[in-house]
Amino acid sequence: MKNQSVRDGSRPPGMADVARVAGVSAQTVSRALAGHPNVQEKTRAKVLAAVDQLGYRKNNAARMLSSGRSRTIGVVTLQTSFYSRTALTLGIERAAQEAGYAVSTATTASLDTSAIEASMLRLADQHVEGLVLAVPLIHVSRQIEQLTRAVPTITIDGSRTPTTEVVAVDQSLAARLATRHLLDLGHETVWHVAGPGEWLDAASRAQGWRAVLEAEGRTVPPELKGDWSPASGYRNGLILGRIPDVTAVFVASDEMAFGVIRALHELGRRVPEDISVVGVDDIALAEYCSPSLTTVAQPFAEMGALAVSHLMRYIADPDASPEPASVEPTLVVRASTAPVRR
Image 1 (cartoon, rainbow, N blue to C red):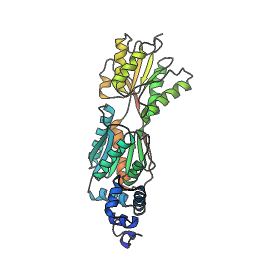
Image 2: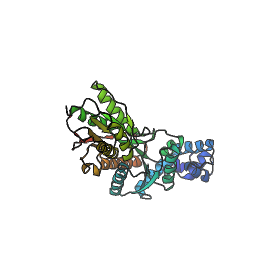
Image 3: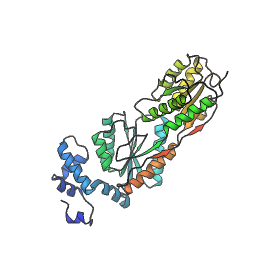
Image 4: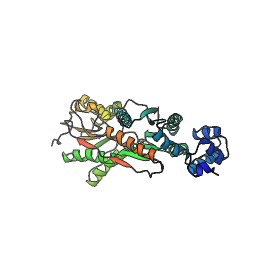
């Protein structure tokens, strides 16, 4: 039962109110919300029910926004040197700074659910007002769902939970733009070097590539697998360069495309005279490699700004219905693609 001061709105609910409603101590409430392993599931469920009843965490996040008590958002990202992750984080930091917020980043060494949980908990313990998950959520655990209920959360990379908003690039469109460009140059079909299967972006790009070929009645070649690294692109390039019929390749990232081009060069296959290559991302080096890389640009700065903008709105009104936001990619034509040689 809520006391009168909480019920009439004269003061916001506190941890003591949650403890009273749940029938536990304030220390137990703190441990349950932090995901402490020593809290029994039955007790944790009672605490979460009290949190939902009182709106404890959500109301606190909105008050922090108006009072300036934290002015910090958390970002969970993959521990990697890939340009796309760095550019996205930079976009978030710039937008947050413009909004008067600091950014605390927690990196995860893998996409394992427990690793993502640990990163989210570290940020929640810092009392961040909101979270940006810049990692794909293939499996949403109960604890991740609890955390996204407790802290306003935006997800990037096409993954979501029932209580999060999504900011994403239309990755299927990126693949369709690349594949259509190569077909328009007269290539009979397009080979594809895909990203790792656990990334939703990679799956969406492969789906878009396949959809264009099937719609045009073209042969769909076997899909080759990479891991976003130039080394994996190089390994796949050594395969592609030994297939005489290959004239066009859509590579799921610029960094893999660099590896593909290097391998083709070593095998004596010229780009674009013999094989045209298209990447995705439009990283800074794409314009300066030899030949300059045709690619599908992802607006990382715009994605970061949009994620922060949605997070600010969500923090101010945690009861707002989560709505997805999509950013369209654009094709940047350079020297690595050319009409097929008959």
